[in-house]
Length: 456
Image 1: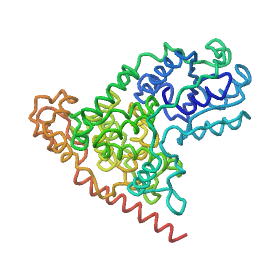
Image 2: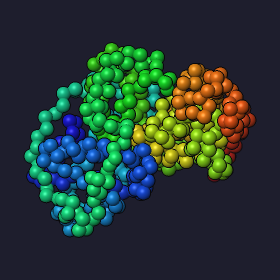
Image 3: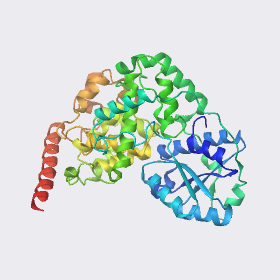
């Protein structure tokens, strides 16, 4: 609430204000029925609860209503509160596109605002007016623009003109079914402590750990990352706050670069919305994926026989968190060792990552699957055994999440079937053979695509 564009504008420009989160499960991407088991949805509900507690301090309250945008907006206007304007922050995913369309269809004045990026997708373009599809030139232009128009660390003064519209749970219940505050509990552990703990963690990172960020960021047992992605992606921390505070400290450039990947993928989604439904690079849309459901289930449950992958997945399932290096390793293994469609992994990560965000999640998966823009070439495949040896040599992280082999020597965690003598599952796919098959599958898809183009 310190820096929230649509809310600030609504409070300044309107006389009465009703604040709602309409959860359209089809557009949001996570079924409401999964709210108890999906870390991704659970963290958003927790963030909403924390936000609502702040709203109450200025005499307002937000309500959560589950239903389609069309039906809820119509019922609100006709039977609960005859609103004449809709304020919201613009998003570029399915939900963001849908709410803009449905808001316009109500006949009310539509007031969209830009809030989730430092620079709008239309502000950083190539000379020909098209969007960037390579990160490095986008990053250079982003930095150049940032230097010319730096983000102010000063927060705007909150002007409260609008009073509460008088919408209550009782008034909503007559026509809709608002989610009660009791149903929002318990809070997700990742967001325990709310805004206060967030600020403390951020300050500690900036003052104590930022200087070694580049050195430590790839090691899952070192607290080398900022941990702020969950706050950025649930809206508890604005990008302007994050960047303006970050750049005040020496050694900030490596983390700033990582942040700009966030805006790179968001602008990509804005200009190419089809990436949420298909491969960015059409020549790889026809890869013949493995149809064995046991492979996906083994990966999902952390039972592949590859310790680094299994530990990463068990951590995800239990806590909703996965270190960025491990995300790349786990994604590569699913796609290029097990040959499972990357879209299955993308959906699972979206449901289970506490910091899930559509553009970033999609961008990361298409990078790993070599189907996206500026992606890793398909013939480059992470070797999970080398990755574990390099980034968890002492098996500290792996032993934490694989208690059944905690007593095994660390060296055995980095060898295929090295832990079999301890009863650990054998690998379900030979890495060398899988890599050869990966190259053949991608080459087949590529050749088929370009052959069809030539025929046409």
